[in-house]
Amino acid sequence: MLKSIIDTTFLHLKRASTTLNQIKKFNLEDSLIEDDNEITKTIDAFIFRYTKLQDFVGDKLFKRLLAALGEYKSNMSYVDVLDKLEKLEIISSSSNWIKFRQLRNQLTQEYPDDISSIISGIMLATNYFEILKNDLINIKEYIYTKKLLDENY
Image 1 (cartoon, helix red, strand yellow):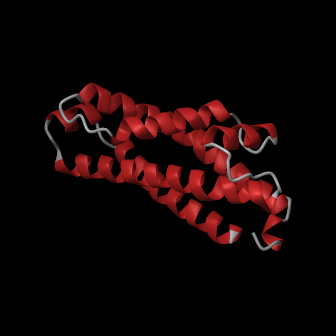
Image 2 (cartoon, one colour):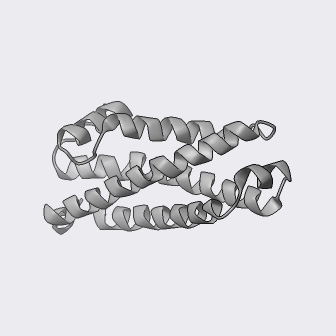
């Protein structure tokens, strides 16, 4: 089960990364002012993938990982899960993951006339995405190092 969750996580990560790399090729301000349909589709695809990745990691990967370590309780909030992962040195910072979630919420709000908010959100996502990606790579390495895939988690 944990192997399947890791595989799905990295599929979402790859797809989000691909769309983010496409966004980086555009001049966002000019493209959004001109209402460029291609950039709009690419931004929408990235937001969808970023949201999907966040939801999947929060709902599946983190909980399953903590369960495999005997550290998960069903009454744990998202913040409790993050704090436990940070304490175990599995993620770099719980506050980063809270920021990732806040950005996810911000990106899903549609303000088509507020181009500066869209651009700043995408630029922030570019910075956050590298941290998120590094944490997920570290989590995968942690799972393999601890041989958690050998168990039925």
